[in-house]
Amino acid sequence: MNIGIFTYGTRGDVQPYIAMALGLMAKGHRVTIAAPENFASLIEGFGIAFHPLYGNAEEGMNSPLGQSVLRSENTIKLMKYFFEVLRDIKTPLRKSYLDGFDKVDFIIANLATLQITSAIAEKQNKKIAFTYFMPPVVPTSEFPLADFDFLNFPWYNKLTYKLAYAFYWKFIKEETVEFREELGLPVLKESLVTHIGKQKLLDLYCLSPTLIPQPKDWDENHKITGFLTVPKHYRENHPPDEIPQALNHWLTAGEKPIYMGFGSNGVGNTAKFVSILNDILAKTNERVLFCTGWGLFDNLPVHENLFVTKYVNHEAILPKCKAGIFHGGAGTLAAMLRNHLPVIIISFYTDQPTWGKIIERMNLGVHIPVKKLNLDKLLAALKYVQADDVKRNVAKIGQQINNEKGLENVVREIELYFNR
Image 1 (spheres, one colour):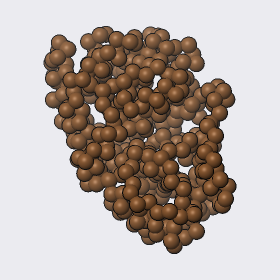
Image 2: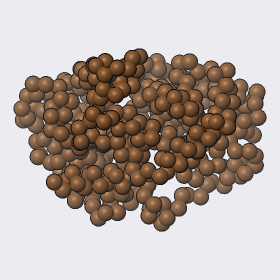
Image 3: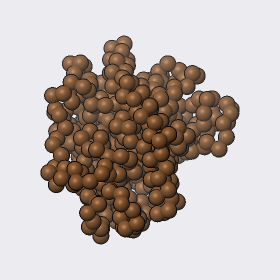
Image 4: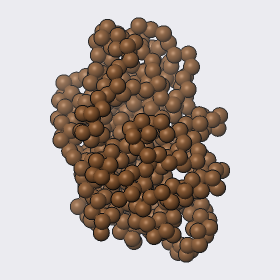
């Protein structure tokens, strides 16, 4: 099969698809990942064909307006900004999707591409499956949608999903209607989510059932598969890059450090984090490996207990750390738990608070919303996650996640679905 994977967003929206592509390629399929232009080197570095979607996600996040929105630490403002950026570049962006569809026969897409990929797939009569790396948004009576978890009983739980669908449709309706008209598709008489739901398309949540068990009242096209990891055969033939000499020297010069990084999440109030980092170094003996990612951090301290870099190879570095402080992205959370690290999630927006609540409920770490972050809370959290009971819980859950076959499950489901 000739499969195209379409994704848009940050590195967390791209990285898991690399594992998926490698898994499909190992079964003899041709795979192209279509993603924002700035991910070309990352994807092609794994020997995967790349198709650029118009735009640069990192530049958008770090623009003056993007930084202003991030500083607000407001999820609604961030969503509005994201959709406004996409609207501003809609003409070249849509063309880049259409060009990508011309290269492939089957489509795998994520939520951020829904209004475009679903329309083109319908127009071209190409089979499409959807994959997600966030807590489920499929209605169930078993638990409410994450942001509405004030109550928990069946009719309320299902209502929370209807409310979220209405809110989401408000954001994407104008673009969806316009693009469908442009393609000559019938006018929708319902929301896009309802329209797609009636088609019973394959809907995979690439998450650990250890953290979120699959609801018993879902239709069979919705599945929780397990986290995605780069396949074993690839890891054996491509060992992780050697740790840079300076970092390796620092790691071996003292006790295991705390990993601290926010990836491509984007941090608006960097001054708050710099101040807290200064205090940690001044008031404790903790060693900190700080990864700036897409963050624009100025005036970071120089200290023997601090090592600063943009990114690290999680596979090589996390086993050498004792705890992780990060934003709560699903991919980083999976990497932390696979390596038996207790975690401190400093959540900013979208699904991050949900993962924070889950790790607290399962006693795997601590959740601190970024608006409530201060030095005292972080120091207390660092002490808490080093307790023996937390470490035992993390080791147990980490082993269960390591034993899951998420990638194999996803590849099997995709092959069965596309071969029907």
